[in-house]
Amino acid sequence: MKIVVCVKQVPDTETKVVIGGDGLSIDPAEVKYVMNPYDEFAVEEALKLKEAAGEGEVIVLTLGGEEAQPVMRTAMAMGADSGVLLKVENAALADGLSIAKALADEVKTIEADLVLTGKIAIDGYGYQVASILGEVLDFPVLSTAKSLEINDGVATIQRDIEGGKETVTAKLPCVISAEKGLNDPRYPALKGIMQAKRKPLEIKDVSLEDEGIEILEMSYPPKKPDGRIVGEGPEAAAELVKLLRDEAQVI
Image 1 (tube, helix red, strand yellow):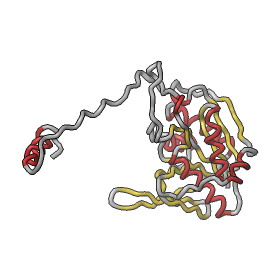
Image 2 (cartoon, one colour):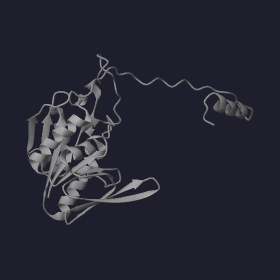
Image 3 (cartoon, helix red, strand yellow):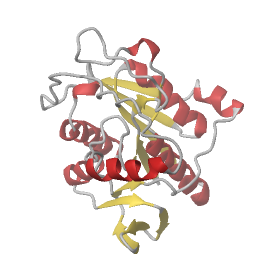
Image 4 (tube, rainbow, N blue to C red):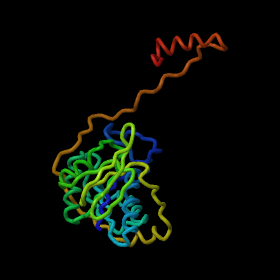
């Protein structure tokens, strides 16, 4: 089985974001980039499927600049066999539709049996690419999988819904997006890191069909007001309740 895993390079959640001098972009100087955490679940699941079958191929696919290569090498260090980087000038301004179309063109070339993605990218929170990718490919989409089994060419996932769980099936080929809890991603071992340096990583220049996103302004969220002391001892309780009700309106 040939499995394509779509991954994305995103800023580490612990990064302190600094707006650049143009007011329209993030200053990359102090930004540490990592693989999108939900994509790690997708990579791990692809590797588990390959190991369970005893054969197959796991191909990592991403759209971005050349600086995205370390993230792809991380996936290869985990165990992916190869990677394809669809190189574009400014991937940050690409919208979900244009990204999905570019990924779909490559998936068709690869002739994948299964496409795995993370359920969402933590930088843009668009929650679009997996669904649009399935639509463009004319593949069924099984979203937010917390368990996955494949038997006789049929994928079965289980996902959380309000008040319970839902089981959904689809015939391969299909697109499946990974939710937290699907698995525990492995850490790349030293041997895997060394092997990843020799694994094939193809870079293809692509142009996006649509114009994408235009950033009009970037600004920091308003600072929280300083706290204040309303009194001391039991006498302060009544005043605190009054302020929480009338001013903060939280009770």
